Image (cartoon, rainbow, N blue to C red; front, side, top):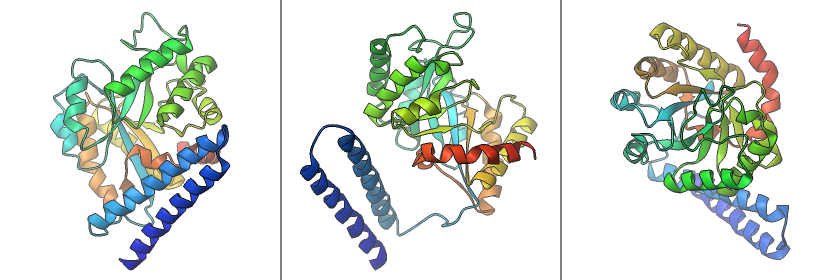
Length: 303
């Protein structure tokens, strides 16, 4: 206990020193931007330590075989699977699709128990025949229109910590559009998950230019909805996590079999020292790690 209290005091001292340094250096530019981010990171670490102390020092495994974040897309439509996902018993990051019939219901029901991100509708290549829905970001939008939509949704779901794309195979290729979006995410201190609906996505590039934490999804669990396919994808997710040290999967709220497979297989992998985490836990220094993973992914895909 003394060691953790010492560590807590040390981090508080670091936070005070950073504040004093900023007061001395106070000037416009990158210093404030990056210092603000570091202050938030220190506060996040202090919060984690304080929470662990309150919980009786219930820390996770120091060396998991791999960390896995599972994102559940399309919250706002289907209510039939709610209990199935709750029964999985692991952290899930919920991606709420704005302004759908049950969006607010899902958000209000789970906002205290799950991490939330915005599942942002974006223009697909088949637009307008393929309609991404209300609030979609289009290639034709001005920066002001993108700002209006994003700001409104952040206000509607104030506990969100990030964003991923719904459809978007056209919009994610647009440097002007994605640049405007990343500037807003930086302003609101939100991260971005690229759902990989297009191999031509510029999300990583534009996030790097705007100092936004970013990751790519590694595995779609339920592109096909039969249990055998989802099981195969879940096992592949674990192989990716072991090879890379971490992995991100996307499933869908309307697919009951996804919840069933997660609930059945997650305990097996927990016993093998894999760790299920919120998506935000895999966002620290994410832009610096991306280039290291390309060759590892190629090796996993060949297995």
